[in-house]
Image (cartoon, rainbow, N blue to C red):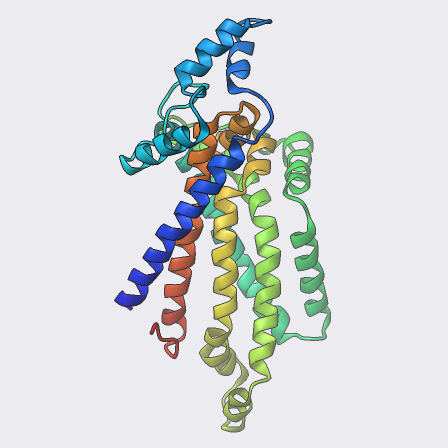
Length: 317
């Protein structure tokens, strides 16, 4: 186990370095000049001299390979750079936004798990019946529904017509906990719709595959009742592909919440990434992509280690 973790961490370092290198050079291929973006908010027609001064202050006048080496040197010291727009350390802005995204991403993943797994089991146990058809159709619809569509539908129903919940915005849970709870419900549901549909389908397919195995026939031949067979034997063996799906969804929920956060005006990392791309804020984009890469690698490592807890036959050699 220890050797496996060390090997995976070594792979993580190599993968992260490749991602950092690729994103640094790809970001600099984006059209537009950050200096012009910054000056555009100060003066309508910046002069060439003003543009050059800003570029020199930001270090954008240096050769690209020099900027790259400076960036790597800063990373080695734990410095992600300074935002070209806010003029604050990138790590400060990221640490401010990450908890806000987790406030909707974690409940969304829990909701997808708590709803998707039981419904998938229920559909598999009722294969070919009306309940199976309804669950299967619901899972396809949920997985196919874009998050911005589900978000807008939730706003129209619960905010506009019923007026039960606020349509957008964020408040600190320490300042107004009730208001905070009322505001996380809709974005959490919108973010959980697609993962729930995927988990339902994965759970159903995995359960049906396991129900057709010889050990299930043997268990039933020994006189074990259906619930004992399903929940005592089949369920545990069916969870491995579902855990894989949940691990991938955790990464996407954490880093792919751009649309949902934009619909509900939620000030998380999704909105931050969108703003940084529009403003050509290179250090923020690079810091965000580094966060994305590290989160996916960490989630995949945790997912792989979880396999051993679910299925003792799995060994990490």
